Length: 523
Image 1 (cartoon, rainbow, N blue to C red):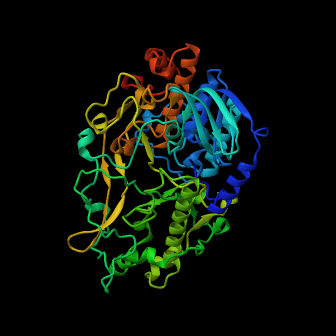
Image 2: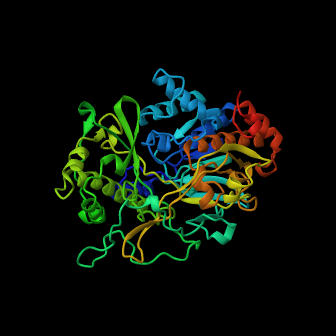
């Protein structure tokens, strides 16, 4: 379920109250061949692929804006081996490139990505139902018959796709899933569960976890980490991917958030006081975008990632998720305000922070703040095949591949602890290069006994370790296109998704110029 920052807790409560007043007579029944939940890049790619095969498609999204994180600040696309990106996914970057007079670009402004996705929706003849939230799923046996949104509208289809980052549709449909980190013993994974502290992902100098009075700093977990390799429900940190600039004519200064809490940054201040020569570029990644803008992302241990603040998000309802999203906004806005205004911050760092601001021409209807929180990982389906560490590191080939990927294992921190020396240490980081691997069609399928007409191209069937690599928008789009093609073939040949002849699917994947096996790399 996507979280637009325009929908605060009070507004959501009002909207729910209004929805309850909608009479049964006013509720509408919508019918289509395919219903897709969430207009993420994967959802749009799936819809375009299904529509290309002649199917009627409805996409339901919680927000007014479409395009997921690509339209919400993630303008420096994680592409890794770009030679593996094909089909609609690559065409999106071609379209964005043409906007700038280029054949292709991987770095772009959020509003340009959103416009491209709107063009694809229009060209494909897809119906998009905006500002609707899933409230119920009806099944007959293992077949999803319809979903209902908070307005009371009912959506019926032959095939459903859950393209949300959170897996809300499949969870409501009773499909098995996991949240958090599996223990290493579950899938024999070296990088599963609680991890050793990674030296180059900490503060560059030792920083005590307690202040001079002996009080532990805010955000530091007083409990010691559990045994290495043990599982838990902790989630890799979320953040906002801010679109920022130094250009004064397009500049909106970072203001003090209403819920500013200086204690959120005491640990950070302790670091800065011990290393006063710290530069702004050491604290954040500034990925250059077009028109003198930057996609700003987390860098060192204490940065835009709000570590430990998102553990409840995957299973939370809309109101609770909104509160978590607002807390992340208050933290991020507060962080830049703190660095640019608190007199305890070293003068040069304070001066340079004040030189950057939000872009006036991005997210103009949302106080220039990204529409969505960057949900790196939430639920993960436990489906017909669970992709794990061994599939990325040792057994890369799959007989039913629908896409190839190559990004490293990369899990962000999940918690902050005090080590045996009394220093603050960040836990959870995983970083390891992988070879190119293949993602099987089976990882998009729930267990047959749980849902026979549902496909999942985003929160797919994978362990935490494997998901930390595949969780990239270009990959999501390729999986979405593959899911859309599979849905069309299933209906065309009147065969269950689980019984689809892979050779039929492979033929269509190749025609779509998707890169599914090593021999299918384009010339």
